[in-house]
Amino acid sequence: SRLLIERGAIEEGKKETQIAGTLLVESRRHDDAILAGKPILQNFVAKRSAPTVADVFAVKMLEKQMTPLIARSYCNLGVSAALNRNYAGAVEFFESSYHWDPTVPGLDKSWGDAAFEAQEYGQATDPLSRSLQAHPDAIEVRSKLCLSQYMLHEYGKVIQTLQPVRDKLDADPVLAFTYADSMIKTGDFPHGVDRLNRLLQTNSGNPMLHRALAEGYIGLKDYRHAIEQLRISVRLNPGDTDAAEREAKLSQTLESQESGTHSGNNRPSDSFAVH
Image (cartoon, rainbow, N blue to C red; front, side, top):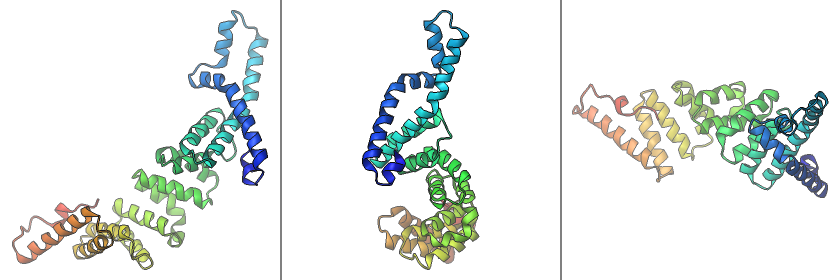
């Protein structure tokens, strides 16, 4: 149904989706039993005091035949839910599909996309990672994976994900920023600052960029440039009170040092660790 809908065969796609829904309803009891750790064979045995070898074989053959069908049904319903922007519901369907058969074509990408759109970044990373491993040239998958990792504060993983395409990042300001800021957050201040300055040439109006650059300069103990970047950031985004307070305190500390009234044992770096 997914391919039919994408190709414009709406009515045929809807018909197949309805069939998938019917199959899902019919298999729901079986699915619940499996998820609860009670295989269908247990229920069969409970009803028959002495199941024969033929009975057991028949049940196992039924499960073998139904498993891929049920998995595809869940996947189709997930695609349908995602098309209707019900991303949270789609995630549940894709998860069930993976339980039945993790090899359903396109499942990992569809699952990761839905979880990303639902802002369920913790659920997005595993399927996106598997999808990227299978298709390393899929830039959309790589982008969503690294952005999910960034939102989870997994900055080291962001760098690993973007490392293979680091020379192409300048073409995508969002990915370029994500990579550079992750460098700063993991302590690689020189490379992070260098990349942010390159990005600044074409994105000077982005307050987040100036704020991140200020953190990089603080890491390098270049407090004058840090103050300059914080001031620009506040000018571009007056609502960033944290940046304003950070700039004021750092300026006050430097002024105190220059006037000789500030203790030499209390350096700006003591109060301004990188966030």
